[in-house]
Image (cartoon, rainbow, N blue to C red; front, side, top):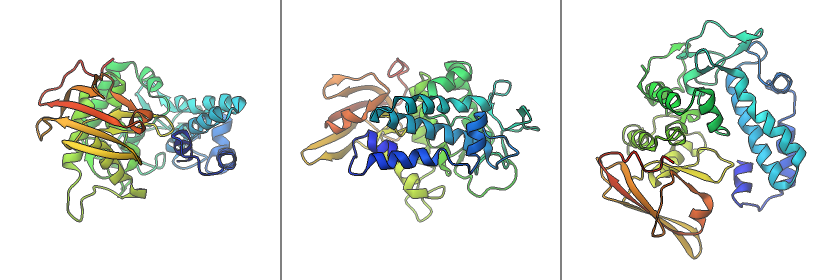
Length: 324
């Protein structure tokens, strides 16, 4: 939260003090951090939820690195950007999943659908894509773009049956994707990083249509800090911040014909979706301020500058738009 605010220009707080707190939180000997710093991962026997904590600490370290670079602390940047690669230490190339480490090997037996003490309110399916700080590196680790797309397809197409212990927080299932628990919320947008943005458009619209309603039970999971609603608001606009701490919003599929954001006293950013409907969920083409726009993402500065992003929608995917 601190990194994303600071790097997006919200500076009405003492960033040096905040940065000091960020570093202290990353260097204390609690919640497995001592083992994480020593080994580059948390061994399963030393701390519960070791896989989830290793992955989340690695992303947190990346956030610290971004603030360090902005503040000019190059030595800190070098240290934390290296720590941010720790996710690689728990990836098992044999199975293609993030797995708990124990005694120099991987925790056995292994079932990616099993909910156990190695993950936080989740299983390996729901944490193996949690590398928001280095998605390109994760794609390479998983065998390249085609294999990564197949892995995402398997996530959404798998049986929703869970094994292991009961966990009430795992809800809103599409395959092994659990929209009711927030660590999954970026996953649909990962298709765009692998050159298949039309798949992101399809699944994000499916989530909006199937997992949200207007009734009292309109959310499919716990509204942690407003995140269930925030996902919907941003996704309905047509883009989502996969990596807080960066200035990129990945384009999904807009829900409304027109949506307008007041970005400053005298500036507005408008999203128009021509021909959008229940069936017309795919982006055929796009324009930003009257110029052809072929990127599957938009930058924070483009939104703050104001203007208009126009999508031409249709019932079939344009597999050439946004793939470069």
